[in-house]
Length: 237
Image 1: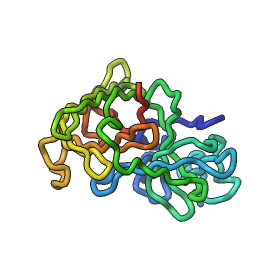
Image 2: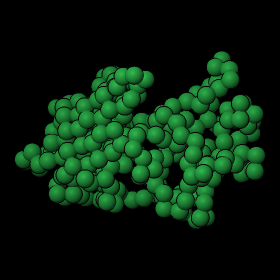
Image 3: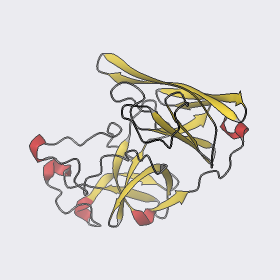
Image 4: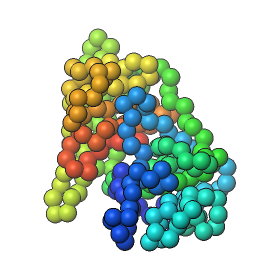
């Protein structure tokens, strides 16, 4: 059962007692988060043919105390295989908190969980992408981006993302002009606010990187309605 336990991106685990649940417990992996100062990292699963996810203490109806650990009791049934790409979060001892989405996913369904650090190999981003390396139509479950030349070494980034919410839909949009710097495209709102300026709160902040044939997009979850995020690995259409 490959990555069978699927949760909402940045979601929290279901618990029998909400009062006993601590989303900030360092032993709990509930997503990758956003860091104003550090771009997101991608890693490839390596080594063993199958690498099982490892439990947090809140799994099994709060009966996984002592996890994450390299024990049979902490081993989940869900797993990834060599070559799968994950978004990398924080570390806890011998484990790294990751978020995984199948490249064949039709909706934004993510698996968040611990993996052994030794089973992950960092994927180096493209160092100095040319403008043509960015441009094109990029797709991701729920939406996509179009990047086009805007003159003067700048690029125009436009996109939409839609997430089902019960009987309704929540959506978000991007429309910015920005100049790539140091292998990154980073912008705030429409691109007129310097990304280096401290976050003023409730503003859409986005970073883009080229990872192999893919486009890595990350945002701070303030670019649309509740549950809307552009974060993920995009393929050229």
